[in-house]
Length: 116
Image (cartoon, rainbow, N blue to C red; front, side):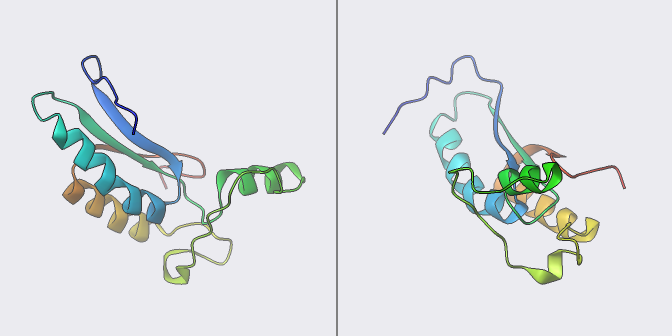
């Protein structure tokens, strides 16, 4: 396993991913940060608003193909997403609350998110 030198880090996080994927990965990141508890490194979580991967979303937006060689991670939580595959604000808030319990200090939104 690779060792990360954290002396100069102020924050580290997960960005541009489906909220459920962040919820799955964040505990592992938090555990690594806690191993270096003498440092004050904040955890960041910035999720996407849609249930397909960014590559699939970009391909759709551009009218192209999503077959770009990247692995795809599709979320199948219909109660969290509308008919267009965009997450409901209340569902995003549910994930954000979960992320704070895991240890995230900075929470925001990436692709597809808006203040609405």
